[in-house]
Amino acid sequence: MVQRVYRQIKQNDPDAHITIATSKNQVSAIRNQLGTDVDVSVEPCRKDTFPAIALAAAYLADIKNVRQDECVVICPIDLYVDDDYFDMLKILSEQADNGKAKLLLMGIEPDCPSEKYGYIIPNGKDTISGIKLFKEKPDIETAEDFIRNGALWNGGIFACRIQYILDKAHELINFKDYQDLINKYFTLEKISFDYAVVEKEADIQIVRYSGQWKDVGTWNTLTETMEESVVGKGKMDDQCSDIQIINELDIPVLAMGLKNIVIAASVDGVLVCDKERSSYMKPFVEEMGQKVMFAEKSWGTFQVLDITEEAMTIKIKLKPGQRLNYHSHQYRDELWIVIGGHGKAIIDDIEQKLDIGDVVKIPAGCKHAAIAEQFLQLIEIQIGENLNQQDKEKFT
Image 1: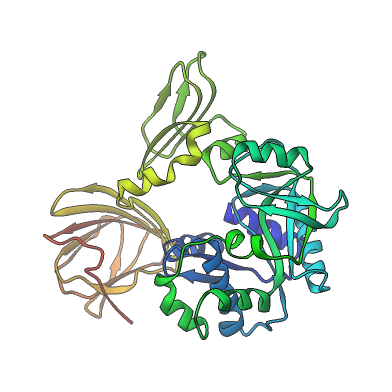
Image 2: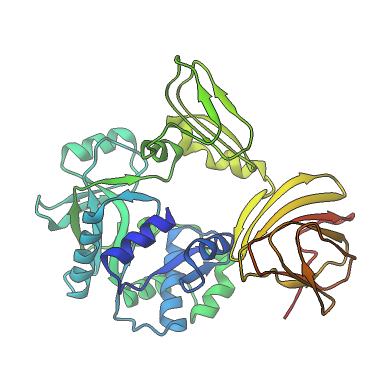
């Protein structure tokens, strides 16, 4: 999703400056997918959209030295939209830049009452208008009444000046600058931009959008954008209807006699879910506390293949020209087995070649790094009583 939206923005506005606001555990994946040149405002922890937007504004003002009277457009990446959407983003930006209102919103033509979205009742049916009412995520009966009165969905797309965001942030948070906000971030209240700012703002204009727009933040809506019903190894019998299988594992998935179900299988877990219930899965996933089994990094990927109490086996893929950080572990030994490509290893400042079939032993305490000259694949076996991720010291 981030690749698609990033590409669409650049196609529609090659000069657009993009900053991605995200939590720190997503940064490596973003670097892997978009490259190292993209700007990223990194949240130390997840605190919902108002703190994230405030931090991004402070990042632009204090770190990137962007003028505070510059206008910004804030939009999510979990959308499936066409080019008309990006034309509307330009209109939003122009309206904010012209000072037509302190805050500009994009209003989406609704296709059903939903508790997932905020609702905006505009003053009229013009493309650009003031608003009568903004209400964030009402119950289903209220949503039905709003739609009868011409309400639009709030798509979480805003335009305003950087100064406006910083002023609102200072009203609710006691901080001096970007670094001070970073230091206090763990103490901030979790609150959305909609609740903290939009519901309380009187000077708002709305830009109406009636083109293709789909929020693909849940499995239900994501499957509606899929061209194929099965991705990966999967089959279903002729009694299945409205079923999608997304299988990242190298084992087959078989579905029989199921209706309105999504099946998603990966090394991190398996989901079998009624599509309408998919938007309620987050708290259950958080309770599981599952160890990360696969991750994208700026240098490539790693996948955990096996875990026991005193050993872990990992498959590491390093992109050409990339390297693992030079580091050491106090409580575990490691073994590298080269299964693809070639490169070099640095062990306690001594360099050696890596070719297919090579085995490198790394005792606890040894500084080590791997560098890929070609696409390099390693099997890493960690052995020790403490395989905690914090057992790592980095060196330059």
